[in-house]
Image (tube, rainbow, N blue to C red; front, side, top):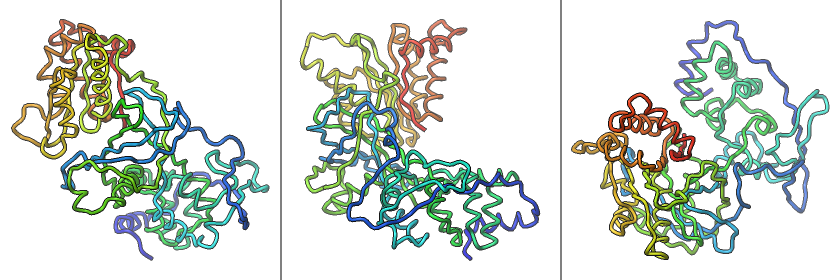
Length: 470
């Protein structure tokens, strides 16, 4: 038996616990039958699962180019890439501020891990038929699972192998774990007594099914248990960073999410572009790389812009753009659109545009620095205010600090009807920025008693618009 050190400690602490309060166990309702067929197909019982917030059909887009936007190779810095999707010949229509959904797939190595652990090599590529066990009083085939397909297809495209392990799933896994110590730990993690351990070891550490199989090798459930309990593999949203109708650009950071894994979609995209690069030395240079030999096409679609995150209809309206890190990406599209509108009509009057950008180090991860400087020179961007959190000699470490430093000027624009756009992290950045803006209004706008209400009114009037993520 091989148990991760942390889980071994957990076992030792719970060895004295005699009775565990476990969730009510529910028998698996799915049945699977394998059959040989000359024509592999994927069939759903009803309608194929709808794509979240879809505003277009799916288009399989070639990658026409990419570049690394950061110079950082230090593990403390996120690597940021820009990818250019060629959408010529598609029906994808968008405006700056829109987002796309990227439909990812699980890595082949992780799919193989499941197949090998459950001894499914002989049937992984055979056709199957899913049905409900007639002995069960209730049950249905999950809507995201095709009733006819192959296990390899489903494990690659339909289920999230890294999905959150719910307690009922852990309980079911324990029923198919032979080693008593391993079984006991799984039971404890889903019990009432193990609530803190569940949060600590499963939620906080992003422990997924792949980890369970590695840590508890005697856990070998029937594959239908996996299919019935794993969540759907969902598309990931990305802001569009351009306004060119023939292409879509996105930028994304690649981070280590723990357990020696990178983000599912970002890691997948990185593997695709790096695999087709001519050399590691070339990849380490911060160059644009045009691609002609990538056969892999990425399924993407346009998402509904439910927040109306786009430039004001009245171009004379002042705009305040706040986007640290990759949060700046939709504003590149905004500024490209302003530049285009000015080019086609030099007489057009545009409102004041002010961008707050933040990163760690201007020499390492100041993405789109050249483009932003050019927007300033062209007059498309009137003011660029930067914040650098890892440079001790700067006044502004974060964008909220910069807002405080420029509070009087910013408040003046807000009182003139400026629209505020915020893109980035929902946990820390967005609340901190809102608090800073409220404080500036209270201090400089003669609205000490109703500054919060002023911002709330802006939100209702769609003059304070968020594009935020967790």
